[in-house]
Image (cartoon, rainbow, N blue to C red; front, side, top):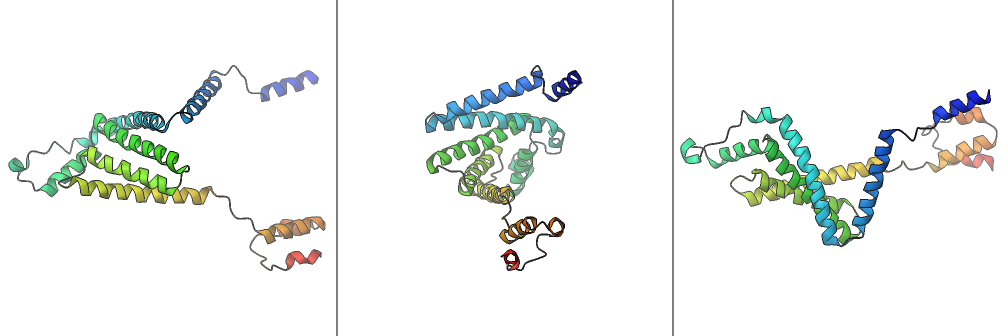
Length: 229
């Protein structure tokens, strides 16, 4: 009986020889050591390392997306010069925007590398200067990444400066909204003091049936918890 019980307990203990678990533990140790080392560096070194690593990750994601969407770029050939095709600047800008969004692996890798690298670098500098990560930090980083994305991707059109500012503002507004939305859903719900007191009162009086049937929001009389006094 004891041997059978020990065998069942052994099955519940995760095996330390699992190569996947060992790889995950080793990766976490390396990541923790890298973060500890990075936190001890000066702000320029930390910003440069964070920007480079994020740009590499973004470039890999962009290359993958460009490979998967390479078929979409075929309907958008390289536009001819405006003099030869008779296209106005607005039409040329539309061609460039379409090509920027449906470019090949190298173009998408460049776009995403710049976007993610700039975002991470500005966020790192802002957190070092302000000592916190809030919606302002997130929006400033998003503005920088949006403006740089507009410049390097060719979406600027005839007025690159104005379009860079417009793209930066759009990125900042979207990022700020997502940040606020994440904060709203991550915060725990506010505790109903009267509801908790009433449940405790019913439990202390031995009225478990009433406690189980007592639902939040159905009884709002604030004098109900005074019944046990």
